[in-house]
Length: 78
Length: 176
Image (cartoon, rainbow over all chains, first blue to last red):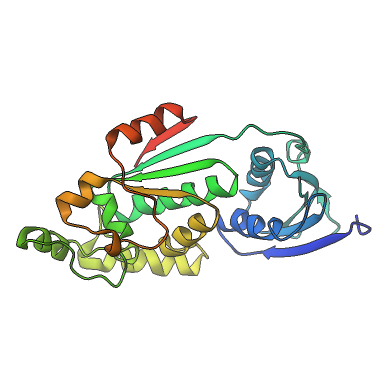
């Protein structure tokens, strides 16, 4: 998971719904098709919310994991 | 602690064409907590690339008057109405537990503490992700609210027929 070429990293730790989603949206708009962004959030709702966001927008959720109360998601711009 | 993969359902990668969904919100009440809900849903829907329109009518329109505007209206009754309910997204009142502004003050304090975006921030973000805010012409006429009283970036004012057309074409409609 460390060999991914991530263009933009977003730290949405501590932010409440819907800010992690809005921050991710801002970030993915700065990269081109096929490029990756990484979002870290602490909002437990984000575990379900980010796949829903990916499903709606068409950006691919390529990786997700959690450690120490942090949820990490990697998306590929459609 | 090493990272653990999230639940399988979170792993579902979604690729390919996605049909654009349409959401319409009728913003009616103008109350703080309902306005908050409207702006959370509208900004998130915009972020989810849903085609999102907010039709703003009756008390809802007060939210979209510029914050710095103190009094709107042309005749004394319209001016009196705006005096009794200060317009602007930052001046909404709670439908219950308002207690002369004590309730909203506590709400904003708590929101800040828990990193919840304010209605004003959410409104800006909603506009940035392309949410359309459509004022009701009749409400503007009745309250004497002019285009220049409203925040920048609003759509052209329309009437009930356009609102109904939007609603019938939408995948989901909310009246808040």
